[in-house]
Length: 397
Image 1 (cartoon, rainbow, N blue to C red):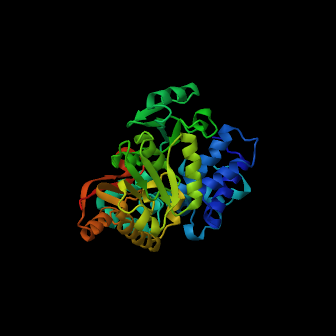
Image 2 (cartoon, helix red, strand yellow):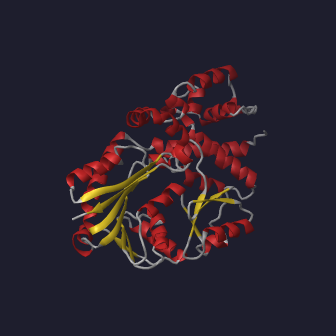
Image 3 (tube, helix red, strand yellow):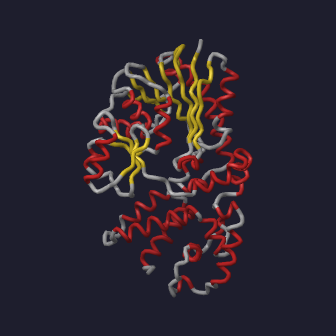
């Protein structure tokens, strides 16, 4: 494989911005790909995929170059560790001077025998994962380091799964059906400018995420509240499942996310209302009004590391402890919007029982008028999608 200096330099600059400055990997890469219009598709793919691969296994590559991740002072050496690991010949450039191949090989072998180095995760996360998941942790963290599949959801308000498959085929993208509305795309391609996307025929949504809205068991005509709607991926799916009939209300604390939701809803043809949530909405306007309530709660996001591998270096135990307090408050306060006989789904994109099953049990112990009907935990190694948890509870009185 022939390497080009300008492309390798772009990768190194990406790494500096991601780890030294602290910017988001996807934003850094997208910005870099716009800097040189002369790059062809192969060049752009090299820069993006190499950056993501190094981000995914950065501790291993830093270790193999003789550096600790929290004190890396030469990202060219980390790139060299990546190239050695991939058995790609190192060019004779000044940036790679004084490299001893035998030292790299020895350190790579040593690092491969240490899970937290091999899987490139912080010490605290390795300890926490083992404590909460036990023997499942090995396969879980290994699966989280695999690239995510590209999955879309057919917008049933405008098309169906098989029709969308044909539309994708017309633009030379093969796909495989999954579930009732999902399609796994055979290749990664920027589809945001494609006509079928601009016309709202589909949304990008991982298959695990698609299962959450289905788990809520909505039907047309219901009053449904998505109380942590964010930018609305699950909200739009709920509009599909309700066939735009009934009342769909999207609540969130972030106004910018709600603006994005309304933009997406217009493209999708989804009927919904969006409001900024506050205590008055819960205590008065929507008190005991919801046939169905979705709480896609804030969480650690450990289940979606496939698509955001740098996130593991921005997390901390203190943050996870704080988010657990937020989850308990949301469950306790927002559940008041469920009417008697109504149902509520608590969901997270976390893999930790302390954010999932234990939170639900804590809520049920304090709220005897709710009963657990069903729960489902999806680990990333189960089907190769994101890790998710969902629990459906019914209010009896």
